[in-house]
Length: 471
Image 1: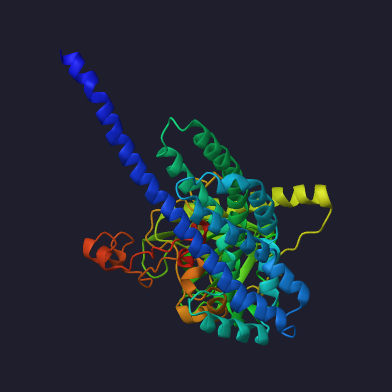
Image 2: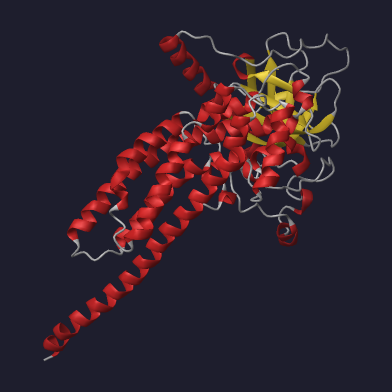
């Protein structure tokens, strides 16, 4: 009898599950339509306030730059306007409009492949006053608070969003609807293939935008040195804060330190004024312990950059902990190794010369002042693989410049948070020789931890730009 009752209840339970799946599916289908409508509206704003006016004002930028910046965005807009109509008319037959994934592949592959050229064209016109005025006016006229770059990133973000939504539709489709499920799975497979290509390209583009943001942060202090930080062959590795210690002068200064694929650069903090750089290929990187001149009997952990055998005053940076110093050294060595391999492969394939950063000024003549003792760490640091995102046991992490330091980037994105770089604001105390590293700044104090500004929810652009609302 018990078995008979159990079997009698199965159809009823299945019907309840199917009703729940149907309701969930309706919500997901509604989200596909509403997000598509927002996406089309955003692309229409891009066309109305940026693309067409800039095409008519031929004196602002060159015609070829206009073509690079906007690529095939009008073709994409026309496709999605038609797709929106079909989605609105399809009701629950959401699989039918997505049968055109072949067109998606062609259009978005072309757009993503040309995205680097768009970034380069915008960068070349960054100092064009007419272009900057146009961007400022377009930002105001659009009324959305989004700048040119915030719109241009939307197509890169849209395809991965389709994949997520289609997975939910498949998950909540009646398993007896075999033909519909097969159609949805085929569309999802094609879209995921496009998304994989886009994500790989997007990571490279995000990294280039990071370099541009750092260049904008350093501003005139970098431009006055006569070399360009942005270059397609240079990529961003890591940024942070540590202290520079000059052996000859015994001066200790807090620095903003940035590691790139081929160089390391440092600037004042919090002014962000360029102070120096070293080409990694020509630098000897050594892990050191330094006797603290301001606190007898105390050693500080750091690393040394020596520019050639004749450098009598090498640059030394020290950190709060040995673990943090190890992290810097490993990142520097790994960056140099990867760049050397990449340069070698590029030379073999294309035989094109690689651009290196401007060589630093020659080291100063020897100083008769007594030098501070520097000893190599007892345990040498190997070039163990360490991801740029790997956490080092320090609360310093990334630093972010005040909003006003991103003047040009604001007109491009419509807000500094759109840059997607340097998202944490960190309060780090000034160097104090009489305070132990473990107690400095109340690091283990829960009250101070809670009062520290928390990272913005707008994480690095590697995860996308959130203000675009259409994704």
